[in-house]
Image (cartoon, rainbow, N blue to C red):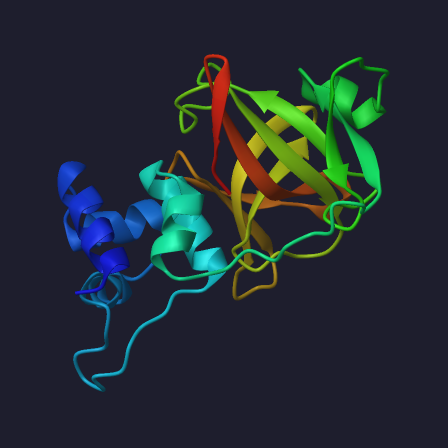
Length: 211
């Protein structure tokens, strides 16, 4: 069992989840979760190395630190030159102001080559969405098209849905919330999509980063 596998096994057991329950919670097959925990495929005996996107999904579903998982999986985050240009990314308290790009005095500085010029930060809390256990900031970038089961923020009639999108057999766009098993059919002309680049969990005066 690898360090990552041991950590995933420990977290799953602490949450009281079976493999199937964990699979539903983080949207991965229970067989794949078993392989991740073992660190290898029992049939082929080959090592199993999850993608960054898979680690993001696990961190979100289990509400654990993403950077910790990256470290255990032996991923090295790309370094950025200190003299890279910085841009201000505005922080919004609500969706309406974010959509209107209303003036705000709150912002964070990001390296210009890590986010798009249209990126925005939106504050959410457990009163906004049950999945978030503490006040969090979502680093968002506008997206057009259909996402393939990638976590995103969807805005429909000024209402926020955070979840994953996929196409059904009839070509309809389906969104499943991360805090619900219910699925919702969405029509493109009523939909606004913001891809979630990063989730920043704020704890008191400090903070710990997720996705």
